[in-house]
Image (tube, rainbow, N blue to C red; front, side, top):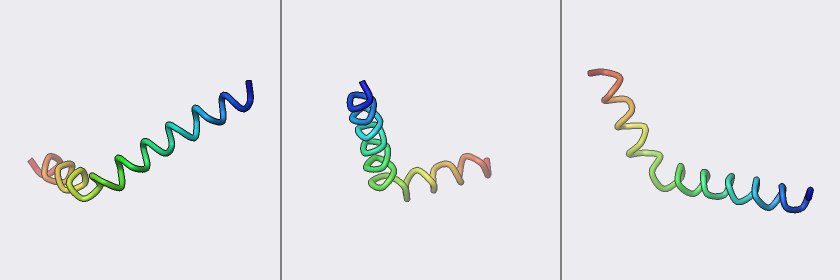
Length: 37
């Protein structure tokens, strides 16, 4: 089951990384503007 766990973890990390990389600028700007409200 270690291989299965590794694949799942790697998939989650890859998804989070790709989403964060693609939307980081918009996400941080949005969060910053929300914090200033």
